[in-house]
Image (cartoon, rainbow, N blue to C red):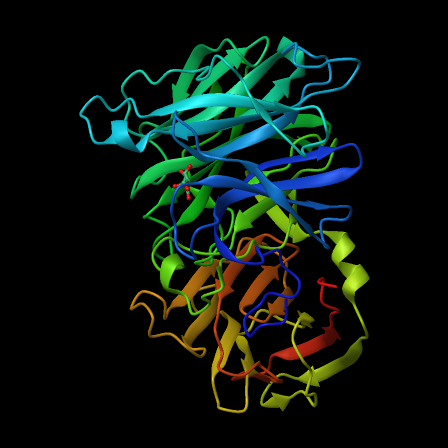
Length: 476
Ligand code: FRU
């Protein structure tokens, strides 16, 4: 796992095609990550669920494929839950079932006009996710005639003592409930008249966060195309969930990550008070043509989701999980210097974590570059109050004309200084600004690794702290 562009701090499959993370669940001391996988090539094809496990969400072990396509179709995206009370009856001899809920996508039927080719099915595992048995009476939720009817995300709703399925249904989200994961009843729909609608709605999620002792519910929905920086992206809404319906607080569209490469992300199931989110670090606009051929795609870093009130509105914050600190190999810290024309005397090798705190809100940029003058620029523009990642000259960009871009994100924080955490891997840059209130993820393909860091600013911006931390790779 040492090829050029092989992510060293992110999960990627050893070979072949991966897209959405699926079935993320914490079970018996291990984090499970399933994912959309095609083992036959490095482009999308008949979908399986690949599988990887981790004790810390940082180091991953690849596992055998968990779900194969069958007579009902390809195995599209979905979720997994721990059925502690054995509501499904799948548990035997005291063994708790892990139940996967996914979309069966029938390609033969997709060619007909009926629009009923996506249906929801289940499978269970009694050996901690090693092997799954598909339920004999699949599908458990039949399509009423909606062309896009997929990506079930299921959670246990304790107040109502039943399961809630959040399903993407074309241009909206539909909620279903079930006592046993097998029989589903439609509850309500949401999404008409608000949110971004530049593309089809996919991979939704619904979860509660705590704000000053009160529950605030968050509904996330990925859309493709129609994201703020082009192609694929994930919007979210805050509100209340009654057990039957989601009532949004307002109709403002917010984005979980404004960069071009965080898609189809959802949260882990069964992680208690912690809400941990993971996305697919790519974009449908060019995912199949990026210059890696043995495998294609990686995931973002796992992120802990929090909630903040800025002014009178709620915003999500996403911060890289703390366990990543275990990868820090060393730190080099410089304090209190002028941002104007500063060259960090490295060179340091990726993967890297860069921590930067400013003394004011003036514009500045941090330039990552290599020996052949390719660069990715991460910065803040005070005139527009926006963060940006500019990958127009980042390296190989000609595999798709939509790839080169100057992506921006609004600054949400009201603080009077800026803080940034930037994770630079072999083929990606992730910016977490202001404790994760403004987040951007972008993949990049420099012809040689970035080994230089410079800061530039026009005006009086002062850097209070710059810390460069080389990281150990996660693959043994
Ligand atoms: C999102 C998506 C899902 C679907 C899966 C198919 O990226 O289009 O809606 O289930 O990918 O691979």
